Length: 88
Image 1 (cartoon, rainbow, N blue to C red):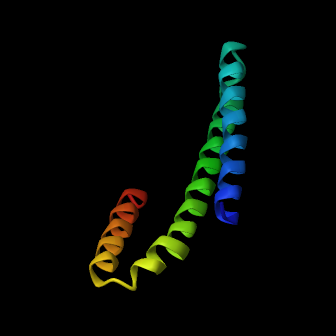
Image 2 (cartoon, rainbow, N blue to C red):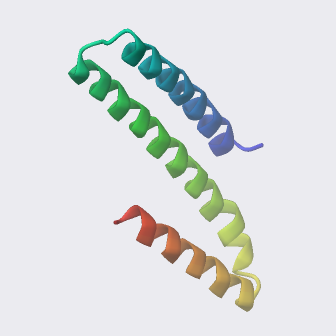
Image 3 (cartoon, helix red, strand yellow):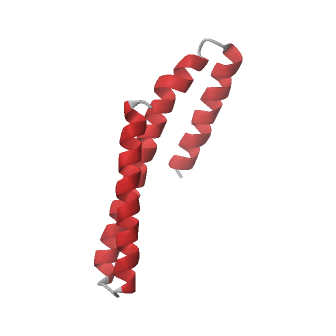
């Protein structure tokens, strides 16, 4: 497991805790703006984890694929699809 993956796991575990906290806040009927702020914090954690995973993918999987022309084209298409989803 590389550093990006370790950091992504940490971010996801933090986000998991935030989501559990959000559920508890809703059950306790906490102030909506406070709940919304926690939801935005959890979303930021997911974005952070995704960025780390994509960084790892580019630094390892994509870089290795450039040794094979077919694999290179395939990885580039994958990244274009991911970017299209992220930029919607």
